[in-house]
Every structure is written in structure tokens, then in C-alpha cells.
Length: 234
Image (tube, rainbow, N blue to C red):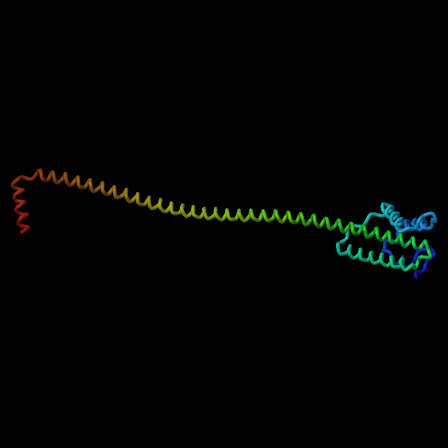
């Protein structure tokens, strides 16, 4: 059984409320709900209490910032445990003799249920944001894969270009060597041509000198010269 305070609020139910439920604007809503519960013309069904609570939700402070998924799940589990305890107390009929306490418990139940709904909505929003982030991450990964593939292709093209440049350098070096060898050969050919020209000029000069010498000799001198040559041969 639960004891009652001077305000008609069950002590056990008050201890089960969240820490922020007993201060500020929620206290004003609590007093208003208690006054409505005292009205004999007002039906005290659970559906009416929940509808009144839901209609009063816009007057509540804005919900806190979204919590982490683990924190939200722990808070929801704690709130569900409180709801189960309150429902068990209602089923046992421990406060059936007081319509005021019953209405308070129903409104507490409605407040906690609304809090659970808000937390579930925050959890759903967080999951939606997580899915959006996962989709964005997948798109970024796809773009990264495309860029990486392009970079690999560019690297392969660069390697092929470097190989072509190396071959061109080797060909240029070979061309320079051949050009140098050709210049040397051309210089040698020029020298040989000059030497041939000198020899031809010398031969022509000797022919001229021989012709002059042959013209100055008499037949008798030629005969004597011939005899001396024959004797030298014997």
C-alpha cells in the first residue's frame, strides 16, 4: 500500500517519476491535472487522461537534444519499467479507494508514456540521420573508388610516357653518336681527297718532267743507255 501526502499525491508514485518531472512548468501542469481530477463531472477513464495529456503536450518545454542510441534505449527501458510498476499497482487495486490518487497515477502514466514516445521519436530521427550518413558515406566511397581508378590509369599512362621518353633519349644519344662518327668520316674523306689530289698533281708533274727529259735525249744516248741497262741486268 502507498501512503498519501497532504497534497493527495502518492509518495511511491512520486519517487518513480523522472528527476525533471517535479520542477518548473511540469509542476504547474501537475496542479492543473489534480484540479481537473477533483472535478466530479469529469470522467476518470484512462483514455480521457491520455487524450488530455496529449492535448497538453504543446505546452511542455521543447524536448532535450537527441541522445546517443544507447542512452535513449536505457532511458526508454527505465520509463517502461516505471510504467509497468504503476500498472501493476493499479491492477492490485492499492489506490482504488481514492479517485484522486488514481487520476494522479493515470496522468503520471500518460506523462511517462508521452516521454517514451518523444524518446522513440528522437531515436527514429537519429536512425534516419544515421541512414542518411551511411548513404552519403557510400556515395563518397563510390566517388573515391572512381577517383582511385582514374589515378591508377593516370599513373599507368605516366609510366608508359616515361618509357617512351627513355627510348627517345636513347635514340637521341644514338643519333648524336652516329652524327659524330659521320662527321669524322667526312673529315677523313676530305683529307683522303686532298691527298689524292696532291698525288695526282705529283704524278702529272713527274710525267711532264719525264716528257721533257725524254725530249732532250738523242738516239745514240738512248742506245748507250739501253746497253748499260742490259749489262746491269746480266
